[in-house]
Amino acid sequence: MSPLQILYASDQIMPSSAADTEQAVNTVAALGRRGMEVHLVLPRRARTQPVDADVLRDFYQVTGPFTVSQIDTSFDGIRWARNGAHAAKVAWRFPAGHFELVYTRNLPVLGAALVRGYRVAYDHFRPWPDIYPQLRGPLRVLMRHPRFLGAFLHSDYARQSFLRVGIPRERLVVAHNGYDATRMEPRLERRRAREHVGLPTDGAVAVYAGRLNERKGLDVVLEMARQCPEALFVLVGSEGHGPIEREAAEIANVRVIAWQKFDATIPYLYAADVLLMPPCVAPLQRHANTVMPLKVFLYLASGRAILAPLAPDTSELLVDGKNALLVPPGDPAAAVGGLRHLLADPPESARLGRAALEDARDLTWDARAEKIQRHLEARLAEIPRDARSVDDSWSITAWLGETARWLARRALGR
Image (cartoon, rainbow, N blue to C red; front, side):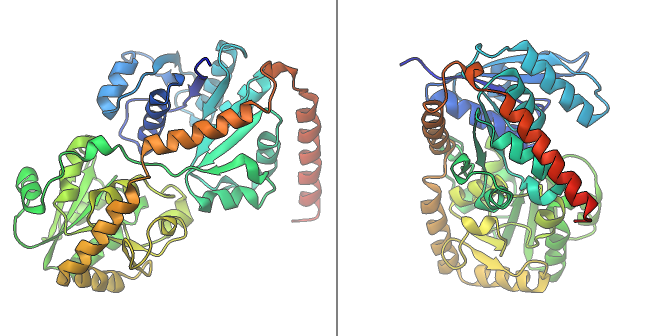
């Protein structure tokens, strides 16, 4: 049996510290390790150095075979126009038949590849139908298309959003992200980890690792630091001198650490008594840009106690009293109480950490790739090898039907 040939089309400039690029490259590498032939196509800005697979493997610290090509960008200053132009270029540069399927996180690519005649899979974390109601009709058309293989969604929270607007259940797969077990080595004892990263070897340390911006709920973490002066709060992931960094500079027990490459981040996790997920749900409800963040998997795999909010996405994996301590979101006083409880009870913190590590064992990128592969192979077996043999008149009829329903709802004021 010949290996599955996949065109993974991304609209992201790489390499980058953005979490969605890390997710994409880890997925590509893991699919490659499963024996699939994956070609990653990226946009490229003018007058920038070309990027190849070795550059990406080095930056993202991944292993696995894949190839890379780039397409020059258009409309670089206008994101929606740039993404649309990139989608069209991808679809027309690689006519159907070059690959067995297109795999993407980008809705314009999804649409363009279906028009071009490809079988297409989609991968994303956002609950689009809830965020943008105007997308519900187009999503129904795209995801009920005969050549649509399925959506690999990063949480059941996101999956439910698509189910509510009528996407067939069998085309929606919860595929939680993961971590690379090799990055967790060597596992460091807490004191040694603190020595390694230059943190005090005595006293309580709470660590947050991720991007530092106001959309992450870090204002609540900073308020926790004000209310809990006996602990050192370490925020790892600064990329400049923004509002969070400026506010943190005024709080004596907060230390801000610059963004670290992936292997350099892990010792900070091992140095922690408690790992912090910002205890609020505003990033999820207002921005929807932190749905099941990647740090959840690294936190679990670190084997340290986790303090997190009771939130509808992360609660799929973080269970109060089992592998984490969950607190009411948006209540710094309750969060401080939870933190002090963990710091005052090392055996309980150690128990939560052991349970977290055990739960992380099956949450690797390789396990995710295996799940994706099984679904793709099953769906591909249901669709003709010649993707063009599927009648595209279905799409035109569906678009007209959804447009008519949208106009009717507008006319009725719904």
